[in-house]
Image (cartoon, rainbow, N blue to C red; front, side):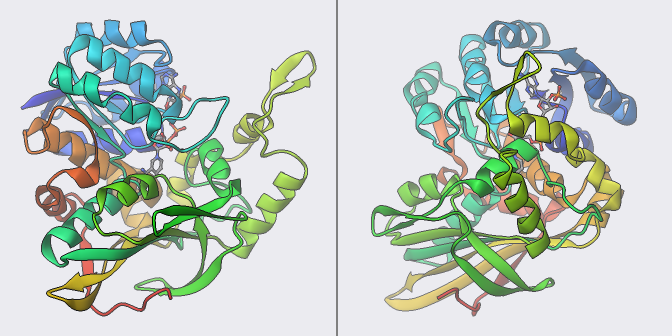
Length: 399
Ligand code: NDP
């Protein structure tokens, strides 16, 4: 059916590649391209020999001209961007220049102004419309499946959704005193930032990790959950008609938070470059270099994740509640694709999003967040591709 250029060769990219290869009717040919060629080659060596033809390339995706050259030589139908958020715009520019569809899992942020905002990528709407190209933003789990869950809830169960609480729980244990489950730089910055939620048309800011509740998660049990800002809040607040309130909650263990507090107190989570032995280094980037590589957590991690959305709204004038979630087992993910559940729950939806575009089910010129497409075929694929979902029509509410 089509050709995909996958940019990045980290934890998420590895899952995307495994999943593309499992769907050779859709992904006839893929090229794995990243900054470090050896990581692409290692994936090819592991997965070559099936029906999906695999090639590799070295690319610095910060340089649009390098991506353009690669697209011209490989000729993909879509670029799956699973590098870092810093590369979003250069890759989008390359897609525009070469006439190729685009998909990513995290919104752009400039290196020197780390703010999770869609404004930079939404500014490309007209350019993609005019070029007749589709750009799918945020097709991971959160953002990603959480947006698809929201569109599905609205389509099938509600006339109006008034409140959404997204709950992201990871009850996995990797045995290290401290490690992050995905890119440490992005992860730590997300957590140390101020919390924010949206209510009655306004953003309400909270001190980092100051809002805490305990929620009893299906198949995981009661966990401490903390209010965070998360990028899908911005798009869902705009795209869900009638919405009054949306919040995002994530679990953290006390041990994780203690380590984080110490690192923060000694300045290791700062992105402000400092002078060290004649070189400028950002402490957080140095910290990333000394922490365990998220990709190495796979074989050690036991336990489950549970990510879902709790909806409150109305149907036929009556109040209605609905909770839809996925439970993913770290060890099962590792057995299947050699990665833990965090990379798995991001990589599978990235592959499904690309599949939607290649199949023509999610094709409309412009730049869109996932909730702006028909959720049904995506939901169907989640069940088939390893992320089955569970529905609960009388969930415990968060307030
Ligand atoms: P990793 O750090 O494991 O991998 C990132 C990859 O991108 C690495 O292979 C890296 O190359 C490559 N890369 C970085 N810069 C460049 C560049 N300039 N040119 C080419 N390649 C580059 O990250 P993850 O796999 O954990 O995360 C990937 C993306 O997924 C991130 O954007 C993250 O924010 C997003 N994500 C989204 C989630 C969601 O649910 N929506 C959840 C988790 C992650 P090298 O090997 O040389 O370092």
